[in-house]
Image (tube, rainbow, N blue to C red):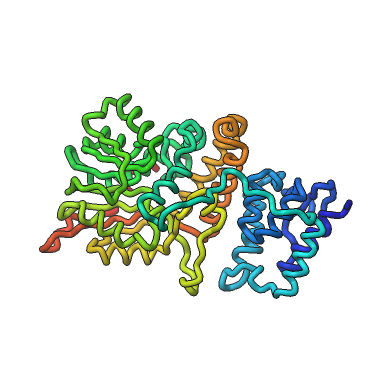
Length: 434
């Protein structure tokens, strides 16, 4: 078989109804497609069996994680070209594969069978989360999902995230470093919340303690941080002790639904609501509302997705669900805002910072690639490949406006209507360095 690349390219173009926008190299050394750009490499015939038994994104993801397919050249360029062809084709941004008829699919399956070999499906890579017990977004199952993603080693996260240890969208200036941008993001949130000396702050999904430390050290807040990850909590407590802030910060391994020691002056939720799930989101908003004192503020920093023409047909991304954020769900920005209002909040400001997350993700990918061998040693080759693909693909999705990220500033406005907001509330932007 000396023409595998040409046969694969022809098959893909027949299914997609358009030229394949990247060059393809097969396991037999053959190549086909446009020259002069990045190359999609199919290293093993086994990758085709994965697609045969699990067509679509999950089959491709399994082949990538297993190292059976790879990219030579600019990974972002490959993802960008394929996004325009497959995921965003047509006025309704439907997959081109949705228009393929059954006879075409049967013919494609036969072609893949000839190329890949008539063998049983390979076992999914070990990094995939397959067993989940309990009902979706129960406390038990949420803890499993959080552990899958976050309890992979603090050293690995430090390699990717850098010294700031902040795992959410940074807030960039034109020439700042990643650490500068993460510091500015934390300070932006603190100023939006109008933190003052002695204020009680609840940091929901506190991660490795960066927001808690910034609020206590720079603003004198008394902070409670909650996380479901024991590894995060241990790391955060060590950092807090080194900063001499143990009298101002308490880190708990606790579900936010079990926090009962309100009221708080302010709540920060930074990149945590994506784990809550649509079925629990109103409960999430109600819980945070109840934990605030009258006049208290919530800063909800959350990734969003674009609304679909028919929301009933929305499906969770298979790769992300299996390998990255099990049971994670993204909601359109409008739905988040409406839910916060339904819970009683007065939403006073929404800031969209989509482009900032693309910049952040590209820096994380650069950190990972620069220390690839160490990353592989800390986790596994498959886990490192999961992270490289998910972060690069997410950067492209933010750049193409397939997903966004927003900060919602909401107030538990007391009776009488005195929100405590300044007449010109966006003064927080004016003090950032230019």
